[in-house]
Length: 396
Ligand SMILES: Cc1cc2nc3c(=O)[nH]c(=O)nc-3n(C[C@H](O)[C@H](O)[C@H](O)COP(=O)(O)OP(=O)(O)OC[C@H]3O[C@@H](n4cnc5c(N)ncnc54)[C@H](O)[C@@H]3O)c2cc1C
Image (tube, rainbow, N blue to C red; front, side, top):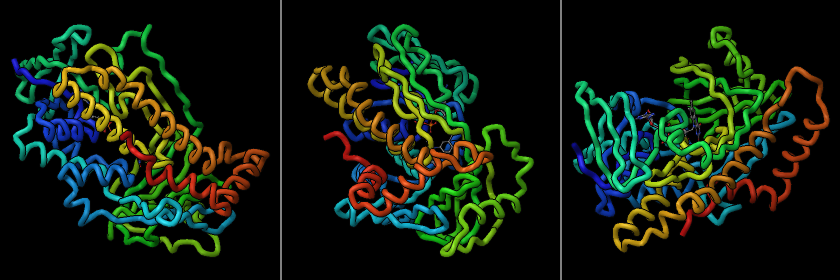
């Protein structure tokens, strides 16, 4: 039997940042992860870090590689009617910017820091189960990599186990309320070995659907096209993907795409989802286990990290003073940011995708063009986009 203060289910960005922040405040935790270390360290997902996320990681002592290898982006391009219009972040947000640094790199840095500090992470845990969240001694059980039965007895459980995890379902049905929007399109994405053709992200609204160009490093690019949710990847050989990307990004100042070897190809569904409340008894949900945003606003990982910052502070206060005031308000505090982020991600998605690319241009498409024209010509509107993209201020 293992005794700890906080048992954390899931070693994604939420679980690892939480474990690290708690450690800095002298609070013990144990992380239980169903995948292998290699798997979580190679899982390519998000890549845009808000300025507040960058500050948090640096202040927590895990920003060294992020500072040397991350690419600072001072803006994005919105592309429509065959032209790009730039949104300048520092100019619109009093000097703020974002940093492009892969989620898998953030995860590597955090695992390294936790293991260096002799933190406990059980990888490849099977049959993970949580019980007793109604009482004051919750328990997490699992079989470790050798098949041995393990039991963690703790004060609190953090459900950082992503959208398909087990923790959200522990909140009784009569307490849990969920809100969901599933979009009628997905993203077909490739990770390719090719030098950047634009330093900044290009978001394109094209009559055939959305397209996105992003450079992940000096040699790797990530590109996406809007596709059908039931799209068959087998119908998308690399050449067809590059051809379609060229079409979606076409126009007078089109980036000169240079096709390179495709390292990964996959389809990402687009969904908005929120679970309320984000806590029940001694269980706290954080990150994707509680909410999902479509990736258009580049917010998923940032929101997960914002949640656990609130949770770490609340737990620190609880252990320091015995007051449960902050932990009792955890859900309420997080949901304010969650819903603002849901709004922004939905808005970016709605402005940039064609809801029915097979139909003629209609009223909604004209409204999208008006919106894009407004956002790129009005300082007030551009500022709204910029302040959300670089990240709203974190809770004081
Ligand atoms: C394919 C894909 C592409 C994405 N692209 C972007 C993007 O471009 N931009 C963006 O901002 N966001 C993107 N996201 C979203 C972003 O990656 C997530 O918001 C982020 O990973 C959330 O972190 P998390 O720690 O909450 O969850 P996760 O990263 O999902 O971590 C949860 C962890 O829990 C583990 N786990 C699950 N069940 C159990 C269990 N029963 N027991 C133990 N462990 C368990 C999982 O293996 C995982 O390691 C993408 C997501 C996906 C799936």
